[in-house]
Image (cartoon, rainbow, N blue to C red):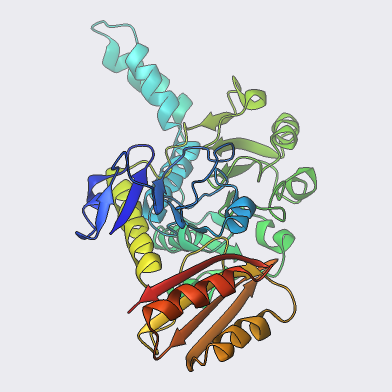
Length: 390
């Protein structure tokens, strides 16, 4: 029996995924898993029982990943769960940027009534005349779950699409329309683009990815969109680019004091993934990740451990989260050998400063389980040892 603690409003569709082996929000129970959305965990102390955190969404900057590793906690996100919702919002914002939809609707709503309303509308509607997306060039920085969907939809709308992604996965490449041009640099991607949209995760490499240097590469009068994360676009540089005409309009899902009250800026209140469908999709994925990790130790979609998916090669499995230091495999296999255990399969993967090892054993009794677990936990670099019965 596993205990799941939820934060924020988790969609019932996701909670319904859990089988009878999982209890949800039992107050007296020590949690094995957290299922969260936007709650900030940086200042929270994790209970010793906690083994896994699943974030219902793509972003995970509200989770202290390094501290989770030190405590032996695997962290997951739900890539692709809200991708279609973000794609649709990006397309809507692009259309609004060129068709003045919000301004036009606001004008109509505030127009003075009168018998001549139709005549006044026909006369004054020309101030909202716009341009079409057909034939316009779109530059996409990041061709993952969201970026590839935006690219394909833009192709269907008749746009000329160029994308840049030095880390493009095989899966994303398979789903990408062959009509999307691939560029080798940001400069090549944005050259001559009418729209530039950013779809990359936030990390040290991508923080400030689009600044004054990059905006100077834009076609004058370009429209810039950031529906990834706050900080990927340098907002101070955006204001300067708006002032000198290098950027005609900036649309983002992330509010920031320095861009408030600017007619050339559209700020949506972080609603990219806020659809009923996306919320349910992310919750379902998170629930499945939790169950899979607790039941098998597999780490597909982990954001702080290497992705490992290993079928059971024996009825007994040990999973070990440990620092990525020399001779760890030697120490782990020595424990198994000293206890006269036959290793049926061993998988080891590393990710930066930490690594993850799965060891499958054929024969093991209850006394051996306790003894082996204690000996593995005694290895200095080990954060967490779990035993799983297949």
